[in-house]
Amino acid sequence: MCYCSIVKTENTQKNVVILGRPNVGKSTLFNRLVGRRIAIESEVSGTTRDRICQEVSWQGVTFNLIDVAGLELSDKSKLYKEMESSVELAIETADLVVLIVDVTEPSNDLDREVAARIRRKKLPTILAVNKVDNSKREDEVNLFERLGRFKSIVPVSAVSGRNSGDLLDAITHELQNLPQAESEEVSDQSGIQLTILGRPNVGKSTLLNAIVGQKRAVVSEIPGTTRDSIDVVFNHKGKKIMIADTAGIRRPGKISKDTLESFSVIRSYRALDRCDVVILLVSAEEGVTNVDESLIGEAMERGKGIILAINKIDLIEDLDRFQDEIQAKLQKQLKFIPWLPVVFVSALDNQNINHLLNLVVKTFEGKNDWIEEEDLKEILKLATERNGQLHNITHLTQASTNPPKFEVSYQSKEAPHYTQMRYLENKIRDVFPFNGVPIELKLVRIGLKKKS
Image (cartoon, rainbow, N blue to C red; front, side, top):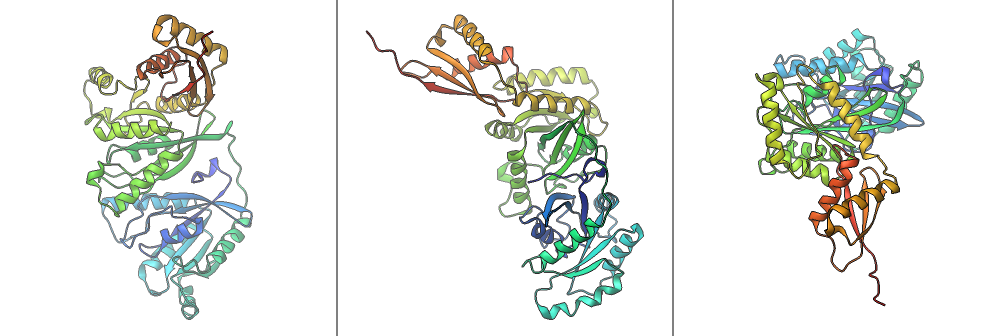
């Protein structure tokens, strides 16, 4: 997946926002235009709760396509008010709006309300009339002209893809007529791909909002609010960071198959697959659970940089005592990964957020560290001098980075025991800590010396 930003000052590409009332096919159209299933599609009203962003290229023009929650203007619940706030932010950052309506409902009052809201913002708008599956229905498209004046009106079928190319043509035509914005310089153009993982309701969306400094994700006390992975781009000390907030992950036994939650969990693991660094967020009230340990293991197997963030410290009265207790507990609970950095944060009060981001950068840089051969020779020499069981190991070389991988050459019939490999890894980390970074030692057997 390509990453994109909804913050104009950090990206010269234009933002195209898909708007419309619930269940008119916004997410299906979004997936059709990007060419694959990114947003969750469902007939359940309100499935899309956050803004989903994807980079799209068409006829030499690249832009950010953003899918947002359906505008349920008559609903006054707390969650929908927060969703409306998210939609408002998307509108504020939009360069072009695609308003989608359903051809089978030409006289819907909510369509008129949505169109009126867009007109008040004076945004250039393309009207996409969805579910036009055949030429007969095209005759009904002109009924939607009553909604206002649009740059163009395009009949489409999001399900079949009918006229989706025409809609992309209309979008790129309008974008080419818009002025170009100036971009902010970023020293590291490659960027760091960051993912926030954790169980439901530990504060992942609040953390994302605290990091970005704006209400990017819907924040709610209702578990399961975030159903899609959300991507944002921002800068930290000259580093470009692409961050993904993900749906909360529960124990597999609690997740029903073929449900919205099951698809969201799949998206969360996809976000894990593509990232460089993972922030595993846990609640200070609950600590590290079996699910969290499993997520750490998943990240390690994939060679990801890992940071453990203990959130909601604003709820703790004696913080110093709490931190000592947690650190002592983690030494026993996670003794197999003593290199895992732990940071105590409050996403709600913005405590230690800057320190957390500094750790993200440091962890990313550690994943790409290269140790010179002379240094590795010295490390192996000291290790074999202090541990006679390593005498059959002849060479230690670094094979690759991201994550760091080392080849351990040995000259014996039996491979060195895993405890010896753990000892050697610790000796490497004594000199090059690789904090937050799993490293791999690969055994390579070389020929035995023949007896003369």
